[in-house]
Image 1 (cartoon, protein in one colour):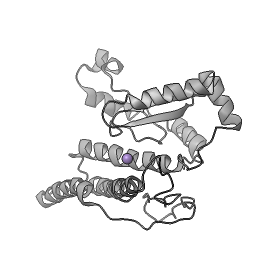
Image 2 (cartoon, protein in one colour; image 1 turned 60 degrees about the vertical axis):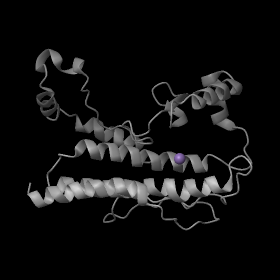
Image 3 (cartoon, rainbow, N blue to C red; image 1 turned 135 degrees about the horizontal axis):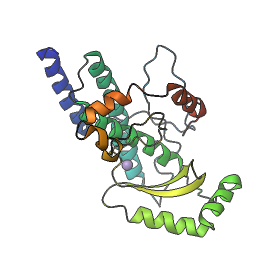
Image 4 (tube, rainbow, N blue to C red; image 1 turned 135 degrees about the vertical axis):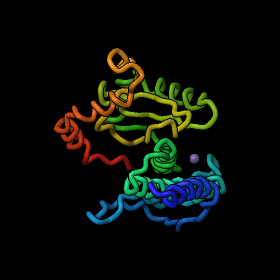
Length: 246
Ligand code: MN
């Protein structure tokens, strides 16, 4: 690629990480319930936006104070949204330039900002001043998965309290066993984007290729690309395309 384009990419890479520090704008606060995320039109960029907070900043007092919610929502979450969209744009640019030299950087930015956006969106909406108890099928699945509700609260609280450093406690549905599980996410940037569903995966643990390819992982991946079962990928997409997580 041309040198000036590479310089642009370098500049953009620096710009995105600076945005993480400087992007402190405050989106409008709305008292109404958050609107349903709208489906982008065919020509609209596939970007994310920050849904309005579903309650006033002081709604969770005294459990979580007004100032914390306000800073958390308007600065921290807003920065993830802005930087997630910037990362998607930078990746568009990198693909256009056919330059994957910074792909590790962009994969990290995508996981960090995308997961930050998704997890904060879930976090705001999974709290309310009233609290409450699970009901219906969810309550049944909690009983089935953890034997009783109290066992779930014990495990979820313990897992969340013992996250090393920064992170999240997560209650998740695991579709192979169809049960609920509790996870810790220590660093949401390592390297998954929470809330996504895998459609196509390639195993690059050494056991997947070392007998034949030894250290030539690249050749293995090149050959893997020739044997993808796209009709299965399409079937998986059909299964999940209607799912929304918020
Ligand atoms: Mn946060």
